[in-house]
Length: 329
Image (cartoon, rainbow, N blue to C red; front, side, top):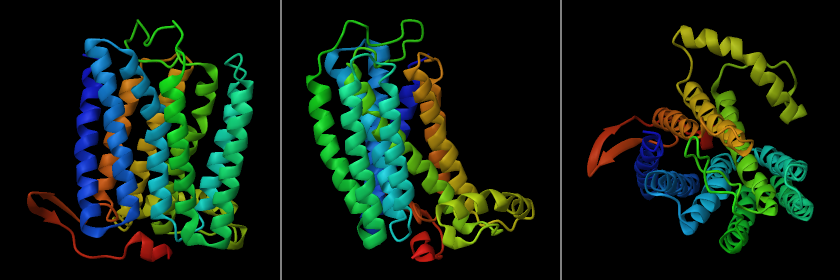
């Protein structure tokens, strides 16, 4: 029964990816392509969980699960969000997310003996990447997503080599009580190096969804916009009561609840994945499934992602409206 959740997540991910990539084929927006790739990674990662839980784990399957699930899924979804918001100063938040991921990786060395060197190297690379994204945001905003993607592609190649060649310990591939995979067999330097990918990418996806909601909600400006990220954070929370009131009056832009769904959907698997790292595994599959369902629901409502739904031919479409890219451009 437990294996049905990753199977459902995998099937939904691939269907979701096909829909997003179909939108990319029609509209050629970079964020749709990158999100589509991220959703394919999601489908593969959860597919390995189904196969491992049902038929048993092999070393290649286990390595594939860790590479894609721990490194690639959140980072590519986060990169897609940056492409969506590349006309804004969202790159500063992405840079902060990457830097925080680097700091978290260094802090994680306390949990994994012998991983200090890996933690310092990961922190250094994360800080260079964060500084590069921040600089491109300040100097040439249209390049911020490309700079982040360049680091991500290079990082993907490096971590793929590391994961596929790492020596695995005899700790076991899964929690015997829940049959949920755990990363305990991988060396500590890989455990800490995954943090900027999953934490940085996950935070970028959450922050991007919240920022998109802020753009469309009725605003109460408690702080002046010149204060940048601080003003956005404070004004977002100050605007929430007005947004709730507008929701009950039927006057709230539909994109606000859509992006809030995406934010919550991104947060849930991030939390359950972190719990898995600390030995709490029972919620892992459930978090992946619930998070994906909420993100899918948010994307269906979002006018940025789905202008129509097609199965061979167009079976549903919405009228033209101002896009988020135009709104923030």
